Length: 281
Image 1 (tube, rainbow, N blue to C red):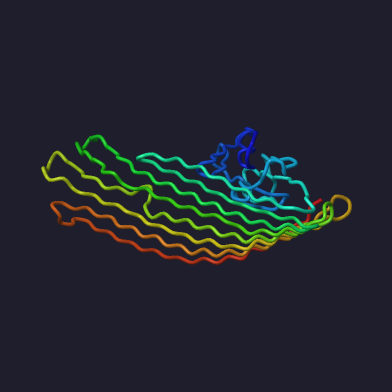
Image 2 (cartoon, helix red, strand yellow):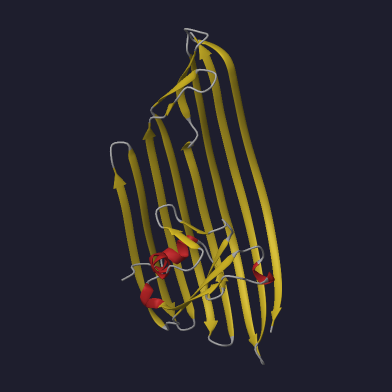
C-alpha cells in the first residue's frame, strides 16, 4: 500500500525511528543521527523518496551500528533489485493550503538501466509559509507583548544526479553529485510586536527579522570490491562546498525613535575533502 520508499519506511514502524514525510526528517527517539543508505551507499532523503516500493527487495535496519558508520545512532539500508534494462519516471506533490498556513512539497525523479549501469536524477522542492499571530501574557514584571502577523517562509531544494556500475557479488561503483539549497527569506523566530509595561503609557515596538541562505554542492565517489571468504574493500571520497549567508535586523523603537538597533551580516565559505578506506571481514 506504500507509494514511495519513505512512505514504506513509515509503515514499517521500526523501533525508535520516527518518519515525518512533511518536513523530510527521519529521527531516532534520542534525536540521534539516522544514516540512510542505498545498496550500502550513503544517500539522502531525496534519493529514498524517489524509490518505488516494487524495486525494493528488503530494508536492513541496524539499531546498533558499528564504528564503520561513525556516530550514527541507526542505519537504514535499502536493498534494491538489479535491473538490466529499462527506466522509469515518477513524481508527486503534496499541497496544504489555507488562509494562514501553506505547505508545498513537489518531487520528480527518473532512472534508466542499461546492462550493469544505472543513471538517475532526483529533485525535491519544499516550501512552507506561516502567517501567525502570537499573544504573550503578562509576566511577573507586568509586561505584555502583543504580536502582529509575521511571515515565516522556508524553501528547501534538494537534488542529485547518480551513476551506478555494479556486478552482483563482485563490485559496486557509485558516483553522486548532490545540490542542496536552503533559503529562509523570513525566519521562524521573526516577530513584530508591541511591548506594554506598567510603568509607561508608551509601548515599545519590536522588530526582529532574520534571512538565511545556504548552497551545498557535493560530489561523492564510492567503490566496493568483494573478495573471497566474505572479505570486502571499501573506498569513499567526498568533496563538499558550502556557501552561506545570514542577515539579522533587531530594532526597538518608542514613539518612532530607535532605542536599540542591531544589524549583523555573516557570510561564510567552507571546503572539505574526506577520504575513507575500509577493510571488512
